[in-house]
Image (cartoon, rainbow, N blue to C red; front, top):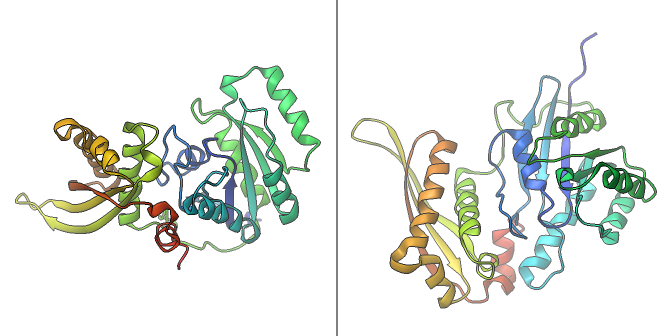
Length: 300
């Protein structure tokens, strides 16, 4: 008897910088979510699609749970929690090096009463004895379908996460074509890549106050009859002083960001990219509800 096909939606939730985006990118095998060693890297709920011979898993990478300090951070947390009632499986990701228990998120999980998998990420940074202690601690907190110690940096037990998710998915047809890996548009992917590169290069006080907008993305042919995309984009920041940092001395910082983004986008899209980036100031945009909702796709 043939194995029945399964499909469904899965939300990864957890505090900032626990590795949710890294897990998704590892499982998908493509860059669909920005990854940087900074808090609040993921802002939108990004959908990534994993297709196997017997299942289609649609992941929702949500913004990390954190203490809100602006309209942007309030909306990001709202975005995270809004996914919980509408998914088939929850994956709660925690950082193995942190002893703090997030009671608010645990309570949200209990209220939702969904099949929930606990992933203890970054186990390569702690001892086996510490791993056992964390497992026992969380066993007493909630009846998780599975508790999986993992490490994205060392590629430990990543496939086990996918296998356990599929076990808990309902039977059903695929929602998307089997060759798709994200529902993000090419513009959104480009914006994510540019912002990720800015996050990686800029000082701590600047990244949280930037957003990227691709204003033009046009495909054309080169003289050699090869495909090339002209991509015009703008990095918006909160202050003139931040604008100076982003551009850098003699434009060197902006050139670094642009070159790094262009190389990654060429790999992603499989063709040449002609990338233009300018920097503008948009004061206090993080407290403008209209702009925040548009940025997070909450007005759709």
